[in-house]
Image 1 (cartoon, rainbow, N blue to C red):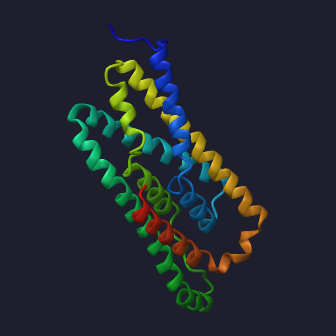
Image 2: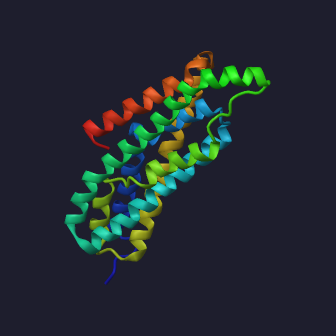
Image 3: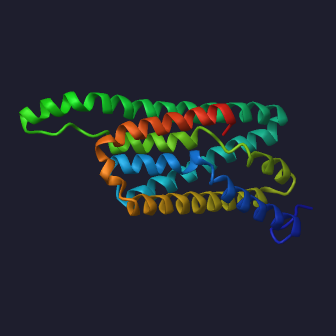
Length: 218
């Protein structure tokens, strides 16, 4: 007999999935790049919220897909993913950091030419920045969440779906909460005074975060 969603074991598993995802969202890779990029791009809170939410959902969708593969393929795939996910996150963070550093190096020359032409140098595309952030999480499934799918494998499809929804909710709430709090703090500290250095600082911060992830894990 397949356990129902009201079964105590199923409920504890779903609740545990929500709590684990909420805590997992506190990792710097899940919120800090969003705050930094939004600051550099001049995003409004609505755009930042939308990009963060989409990235959170993409993260859980990829986690769910890999989790189901693990259920079918066994623990060997889980070990492989645990080694790959931090590397993917580090690579994407490094690429974002290099992107903004290169933009900052080109900015003085572009600014001089633009001044003569009466135009300002183009900022990095909002779509490019948003897709980069979403890809960062979509291509690095949450390895700490994957064992929950093995635990839920004998609980039935309903429990697995509910677990996935609970993890999506926990991830979205955690990421949005930290992103919006950090943004409010940045505005309170008037970080806009550093606007002329924002791309350099952003690039260095993302490269530093990439190094941290590569050395310490996801």
